[in-house]
Image (cartoon, rainbow, N blue to C red):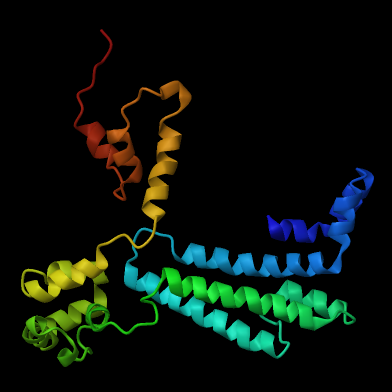
Length: 256
């Protein structure tokens, strides 16, 4: 939405002028507003990309933690670059500043740095474990390279047994993380249980949002008394129905 508004900023000026919205027209023409708009376009583009990476069915908290950690590092990189007057990470803002060289960059730099600093603090507040090294997470991600002595004593011996299991190592290279730990849970119950406790919790609201979207499609005003439990299960299932097999098992009713 903001990118569309920025592309049409000249047309918006004309529209406001024709509609005799003098206050809005003057506010929209101000250089401070134009710079803020350009920065917000770049910023929300980065946020939208982050949001897309946090969506999807086959993901877990470890993968999402990596995404958040990467984004917080990018914020600190942006801060260092802006401090020396480098706005190359914000393409629209950088282009606007290059067009208007007479603009005092001090105010722009101050505002952007203030926002990025607040953003970094908010991320560390909501994701406090992102920057912390977790030996259990290391075990889950890479059980054959983890330092066993950093684990709890109750897990150390079983973790050594797993590290020396050559067939498990081969499976780990090809299988998905969740399927690997489910398969070896009976063989290594202590380590497997701790690993699944890390992997299984929902790391985002994506599945809930997908469920609500499917519910809105199924339960309309015309079908407000519908019991959607079975329909919703089918709509959210990842299995493809075998329609031909289902039809073949049904008895035909030819006309008499």
